[in-house]
Length: 64
Image (cartoon, rainbow, N blue to C red; front, side, top):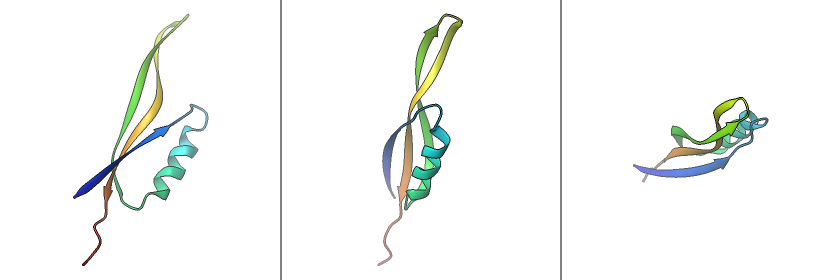
């Protein structure tokens, strides 16, 4: 089995549409989605922001 890892930049307001479009454009099966989370400090306290997603795709093997 072969796998390919894609990096997807996301924004908070358009994350769902961006992810939906990207996943539907893949030819293989999605194995995992891993968020890249960055800690952020705001006046109200500490929080985190997801800036990127790593999407692991299993590449379909051509039938011989």
